[in-house]
Amino acid sequence: MKILFDHLCFWQRFGGVARYFVELHRHLPAECSELTVRFSDNSYLREAGIAVHPFLGRWEFRGKARLEKQWGKIFSVARLLRRDYDIYHQTHYDCYAYRFLSPRVRRVTTLHDANFFTHASHYKPHSTLRRDMIRSAERADHIITVSHNSKRDICHFLGCHPSRVTVIYHGVDHSLCEAAQPFRTAERYIIYVGARSSYKNFARFCRSFAMLCLRDSTLRLYCCGSAPNSGECEMLRRLGIAERVRFYAPSDSELFSLYKSARCFVFPSLSEGFGLPVLEAMAAGCPVALSRRSCFPEVAGDAALYFNPDDEYDMCRVVSQAVEDEPLRERLVALGRLRASLFTWQRSADEHLSLYKQLLQ
Image 1 (cartoon, helix red, strand yellow):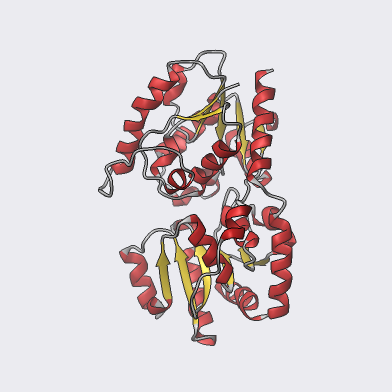
Image 2 (tube, rainbow, N blue to C red):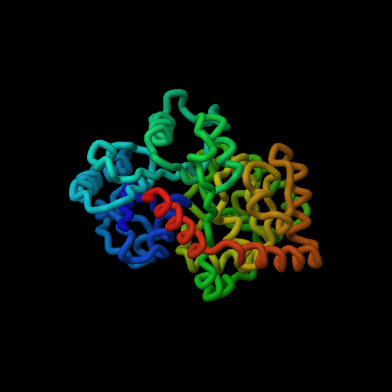
């Protein structure tokens, strides 16, 4: 059996979708799995030792991601036309490849969430990605998603029969976590990981953090991800916390080091498909404070503290507990490590492989 993964998601340097497909490829039997990506600046591909060429080096310009995706299709289509594979698993929603597939090939897509529908106001009304997601769901032989919360949303909004949708959880790289050393700093800090736009609820979290700083002038916020834009810089200045917020773009090993020294990890998002940083933080022994919303209670169970993501006062109260209450912190660390141990990339890959085999029967 041969499974082919295309290039589509690897225009991102970071991000949970690219991480998922790199880990899936790494943990499937080597003779079964192949990536068609040839050019990418994705950090996970590089760190996994997967041979790809940089795409235009460090040049950054408007439209680079679109150009990279279109350029990648040249190599993906050339590979698709050989038709010596059994499963085509697209890594994003563009259905360009379907016209080149043999009728015997099973088509699989992963829909990570239904945010285009659950939080429609945060997207353009005629989003191309939304249209592609609908087409992908309609044309796939089977859909994988990453939480039961997402499955309910996908079945409801896209009209998919539950039998066409399988839930397979993400994992966490426990070996990388164990090897990481605590981040060396004298600062006491909270860690935030990932994108910061719209439904991520970052602006409300910053207002909550400003309240925390009134209680504790030594506390800092470390944001891991992209550099701040001008709007975010202005917001931080207006709140009086610009000097207390640090921005990092860490490697995987550096990120686990940052988790290990943090007072707590906070995820204020209104909606996620799975929330991979939740597992990473718990595996690293970092107390976790999360929105009581979306998939978070499903993923973290009783190993996290929860707040109302619409209420910055409640957010402040709960995060303060995670930072200051030492007996509570010790309990959260123990429960978090136990919870994270249930999720491995090998288990996730084995469940994918079992599903692929079922589709070929």
